[in-house]
Amino acid sequence: MSFESLGLAPALLRALADQGYTQPTPIQAGAIPVVLEGHDLLAAAQTGTGKTAAFALPLLQHLSTAGQTMTRRPRALILTPTRELAAQIYDNLRDYGKHLRISCATIFGGVSMGPQIQALRRGVDIVIATPGRLVDHMQQRTLDLSGVEVLVLDEADRMLDMGFLPPLKRIISALPKQRQTLLFSATFAPEIKSLAMQFMHAPREVSVTPANSVATTVSHEVHPVDASRKRDLLLHVLSKDSRRQTLVFSRTKHGADKLVKYLEQSGLRAAAIHGNKSQNARTRALSDFKSGRVTVLVATDIAARGIDIDQLPIVINFDLPMVAEDYVHRIGRTGRAGADGLALSLVSHDESGLLRDIRKLLAQDIAINEVPGFELSSPLRLDASAPRPKQGQRQPQARSQRQGGQRQGGSSHRPHAHVQGGGGGEHAMGNRKRRPRGSRPAAKA
Image 1 (cartoon, rainbow, N blue to C red):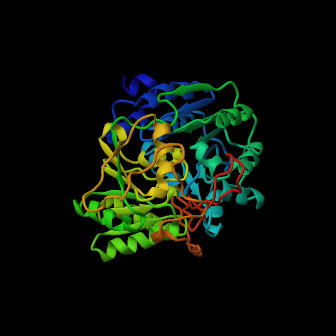
Image 2 (image 1 turned 180 degrees about the vertical axis):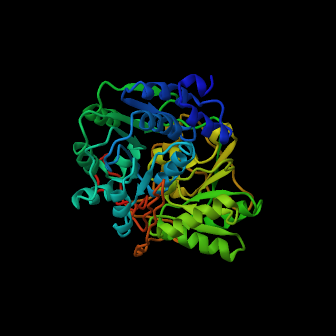
Image 3 (image 1 turned 135 degrees about the vertical axis):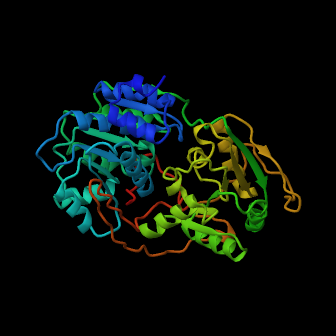
């Protein structure tokens, strides 16, 4: 099957050819025809399989062929949980729509609303937004959603998990009843489908992978280690190939900063990305990592669905996530598009219960290999009584500390107005026990 057979317009086919894309992925082949026919869609596919193109390509085609209007109101709205993911979607839309006259704007939280208001006043076709900042614009009446023809919810499960259910309901209630709604995600819990049924009309469903599955090209491995020696073991692993790009996940923001400082003092090029960083700092860290100027990127879970790097060979869990499903999203950064990847976890005794939950979720064993010189005094316990970090408990080198966010300005460009935000908050994974999905206060993004 080719992109031509999906019914895409010549301008989009030219853009895809410019980037060397000739064959659609399964989620693209299944979703694009359904969206082009105008149906609501509920689509699930594991990360790294091309979900963004599955909604971006037919969306661009709809806006380019439906006829231009004389209004400055947005005609499409894409909601995402994080700034990184919003920026990634913007880049994809820019690339796919390079031969079309379609304008876009990204709306993030944590910055002055001035540049965003200016971009909206000039008029844009597509708004890519995080829910918290979008509600801010609605409250100040700087955004009119009455012209939205297509709504896209990307990573809806993550948005619910971050507490965005109330703003999501408020946003959806302000949209026209007659619209097309597309809901894309790596996973679909029953509560996601229940929510979707409340605002979608007879949606078609496309699923190309079982829920909470990971790419078969990813290998899983655990290095057991005492909590006090985790940093030393991480440095040992990284030093085997200091040129290899490595994404490291820390449970807390302060822990990520301390880890970067330790790695830099040890001679490695490292940077941190989390919610307390300004948007400029986050963008710079990600850019440096992609270009190779930084070889180790230390991130909290906010980055698990916003980092899109080709051929990333390894992801290391310095701390295991408090919820097993987040493991799937973390390691989804490697083994993308059929490439091989390694998911390596450094696990101490108090994380044995978290490891057991992950193995149960994946329905497979994970190789446990001790590293000479870093052996545990006793094996990890993976039975029903396996311990977990207590509420608020962290590794000795990752104690929490309050840090103030920074405000950073944005910019806009035509024909694509990329209005960036910064300094937004995030939930530090491990700071508290998880509440049921959709029940926690909304995090600002």
